[in-house]
Amino acid sequence: MNSGKYVFAQLLQVINRYEFEKCVARYNGNHRVRELNCWNQFIQLFFGQLTARNSLRDICVCLKAHRKKLYHLGIKQNVNQSTLSRANEKRDWRIFADFGETLIKLVRPLYSKISIPNVDIDNDVFALDSTTISLSIKLFTWAKGKYSRGAIKVHTLLDLRGCIPTFIFITDGKYHDSNILDEIVPLSGAIYLMDKAYIDFVALYRMHKADSFFVTRAKVTLDYVVVEENFNLDKNTGLRSDKTIDLAGPKSKRLYPESLRLVEYYDDEKEVELVFLTNNFEASALEIARLYRNRWQIEIFFKWIKQNLTIKKLWGHSENAVNLHVWVAICTYLTVAYVKHMLRSPLSIYEIIQILGISAFDKTHIKELLTETQSNQNVKEQYEFFDF
Image 1 (cartoon, rainbow, N blue to C red):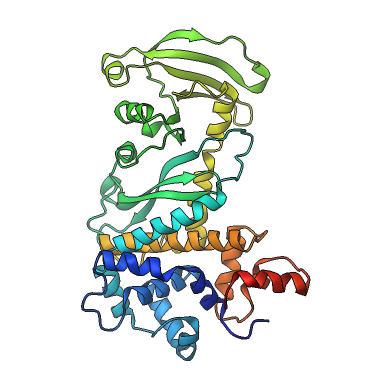
Image 2: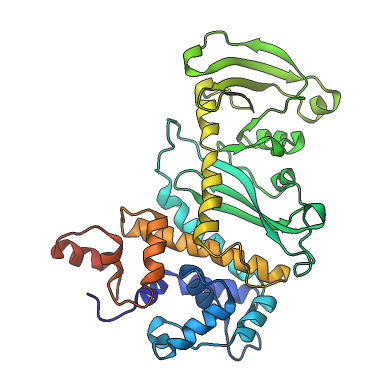
């Protein structure tokens, strides 16, 4: 039993405050601040995400009830809902986005050796997609969605080795998914998995020229001519064809002048034929199909964050407050992923965040909470990671 620090305070020690303050200084975030500086704003919102509070009022009520413990939790002071709300409206959201980028650079390499199911490939593999959060257009007047409704989209590039988000971009609901390709800088040798909504031949050709690969679903209306076909396929694996093609449409041929690869695969489980379009001629046709199957991990990621973090109920109405809210949620996810790796916990991120959420005011050592039963000697040795 650790009689010195609360679990929440132990978590704050994992977060690099020096890097956070660098982000604050970059945007002059603490200029003329009296009560609530950016760090205390962040850790109160972090507390709200970790303990799944539904509103700023919930956060403030909980912290006020434990105000005698705040110093030992690492929180300078409790504030009322209005103060926290004004901070979310006015503090530049890029402070929290930049800190999120810092955490991504820290966490992503830790999971770089994780294998991808059913695929033996050394390339970086990313899944690109967006999730929509429905909102009230009366409250979120800037966030226009379809059919006169309010909505935002959270565009995400997910590293499939460890399911670590590497790129986040928040837009209104009318923003077309393919436009996000203009915001992404493709990595040489990386493979990007996307659905057919991302077929933009200008952006795809730019990826190709950057020596990166894409795998996407081909549209039914795709106009092409077959240049070459591989007939040496094992039909028992579900493969139906493997073709080298040139685009035939005048406009598409001009936008993407080089050859592409078309792989047809029959999914026995769903009884549907899938047609994949890619510029990757190195992987086998079966690897292309199996790679795309792993794109489903991003759908699981979206479902997870909506169920386990406070992201469907936003803590502010302005565009700044929404961006800030989403980035604090991502920072929470990345912090938990970092703790999981550094403690070598066998628990999933879902299990860890559930345990931490109900243990914030407990004084048990975090290692005891997140690892299986082990000898006291092993526990003592592993405590050395945390310099308490």
